[in-house]
Length: 334
Ligand code: PBG
Image 1 (cartoon, rainbow, N blue to C red):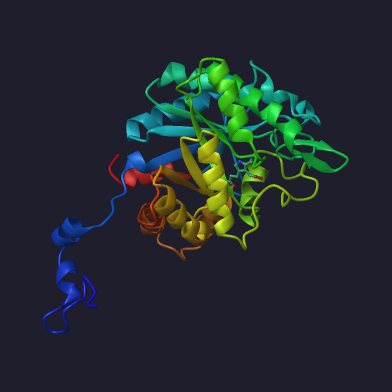
Image 2 (image 1 turned 180 degrees about the vertical axis):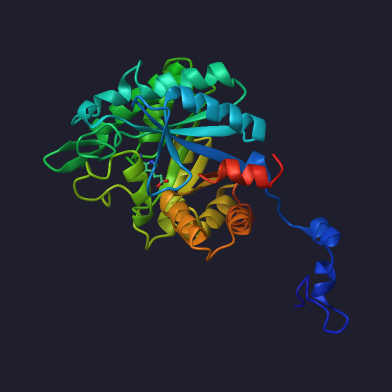
């Protein structure tokens, strides 16, 4: 059988014709990248200073609630639709069950309110997980060195409720406990938060590339052991499809693959299989790796940023969480 798109032979077929000038390249481009594809992750803190640089992530700062509100205004003005919040809380406030995660007057609720005041048009996404609030650095409740699944669900559902109550538009569970999407959906429905979206980190891998983030949120020192009993094994791909199917069945509106650049094969399988908004997270280690090469002059900054982000669109992403968001939006004319 002949292929439907069997190409003609050279010299009749010359693929270079479609690349011969900027206008035709623009005209035939199969995918586009715009500021509307970007989500800006903001690291927030409860310290006194407005902006504290994160050493391992040049260009990234820990922000006070006030500075986070200013960043949200900047994001809005650049055409970035949403920001995602990640907390760095004082080590003295951390405990075994992550009490701070469900404090209605805690750091994240304060940031949500400040952002909603300053830039109500911006979507606010929050991270649902306990790791930033626990003294052991795990995403769930720990007993005798084991991360307890079902006992964690209650804490996570309460955390999501607290975020929704403070005005979050999207809750994004990144903890990888089984059944957390259902537990969160039930808590939201029971409290009439019918329109709060769940963006689940459905396929989240145990990765070395979260290193700089753990440093940024101060959970690196706290972490005892690793996260391999709940985050996925990077050897696996079919398993990601099962994780995504479960989260959709439990009530996820959109799903995420994480890390990003190293997992574009997973992004493509997920978006093609499920046809629902698929996001990916260009994580801290991917960002730091690129920044380091740029600082050395080994990568051309603007081109490398745009190429790396466009790759997510080509793979099938609806959007990408990236620390490059404001810089990329500027490059894209936002
Ligand atoms: C966990 C969480 C992590 C990131 C976001 N949420 C790290 C982890 O699982 O240890 C990583 C983000 C990044 O590396 O940029 N709640």
